[in-house]
Image (cartoon, rainbow, N blue to C red; front, side, top):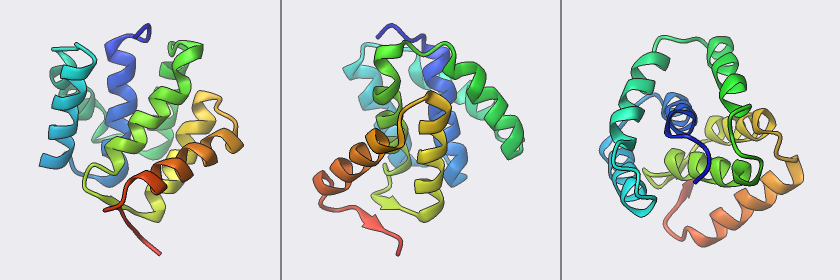
Length: 134
C-alpha cells in the first residue's frame, strides 16, 4: 500500500466516528486487516486517530479528511473507501447515516458517485448476513 498508515487510520477513525463506537467487531476487523496488509502498527495508529476525532464535530472531521484525502494514492482511493465501508459494517449492520457517510467519504476522496454506488451495491450483494436499516 502506497498510502501511509496515518492517512488510512484517519479514514478508518472517521468510519468509527460515524457509528460512534469502536466495538469488538471493528477491533477484530482491524486486527485482520493489519495482518493481511502487513501493517503491525495499524491498531495503535487507529486508536490515536480515534482519540483525536472523538471530540470533533462534522465540520472538523470533514476538514481532517480533506487533508488526509490529499495524501491518498490515486490508485487506492476506491480501496480506502471500501475499507471504510467494511469498517462501518463490521457489526453486520448498515444504517442510513452510515450510507450517507460512505458517500461523503467518496466525495472527499474524489470517487465518482457512480463508482461509489457500484462499490456499495457489490458489497451489499456479497454480505449475506448484513442487516440494512430501511
